[in-house]
Image 1 (cartoon, rainbow, N blue to C red):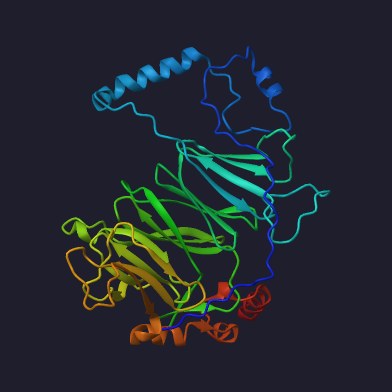
Image 2: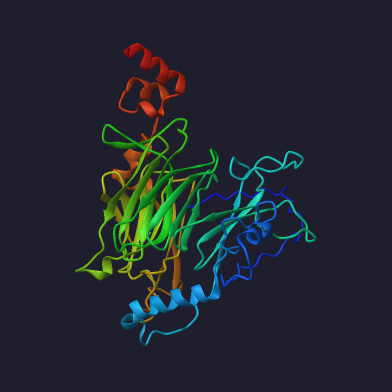
Length: 392
């Protein structure tokens, strides 16, 4: 089947410009300050406030804290490898918003990032650096978000409107970047730790079917969280309600080959994700009903060569995905012209009757939603006020 790919030939990219060099924060050590006033005098224009670098804790206090910890957990620490974990940086380009406000004299084109958000492995802080600077400017963060535990995973939505930060203690914080406020803090079940976060396009369940409403409501997100124990969870956050978390797939105990190793959203299908397991199976999962809709597999003798690291591409606008399949080394070619060990297979969701019906009726209009009072929060504010006054 032919796939039409279009490239715009008039796009011209400017040369990269080196504007700053950011280093990981220094380890927190004993203070050299003699009084709390010296600590506050060190903070200039609130730079570094919340980073933990400017404090009034002596070296002796750090040593006493370490001695207490080692005494309490000696039996767990004996024989432990002291290998240092390399610090890796995760960064996001953030658009202008209530959180990333720029000075009024700075003019930035619409849709262009103005702030770099960054965190490092093993660190508790999320730093915000302005991109409106030159090499001569001092590199200090414009903002610091401190967390109770080191940040393990972060994910920015495709629209750059929402940011999720997951800490090593299993706590997730969901930020509405456009409105400038957190819309939810939720904790994963005990023993679960975040491995990856997958944003879903906001959807509703209308008459038992997942649908996309016209005009997405503000401050409402849905995301899927894959944990290190291969369990899968659904997180729903709304500005007007407490966030909810539910289990989609339990950790496989009896069948380790069913452990999920990768998840990707299928944006053309409301509330659907593709899951890839270590055994090589690929499933389309309905997160609302928590059930598998259908399964996919390359034709025999092809299979996923490295199932725990599958190679795939899911289209953002069209209902299909591409999947790499490898022929086992011991299997010879079927004919003289077919001698390829690696192939890419094309799967179109329209070819599956169960999914075809979902694709045909996946968008619901505002008019239909206004007639259905089960979803008042998706209506425009004027219509909600009108309905409230009519009830009274």
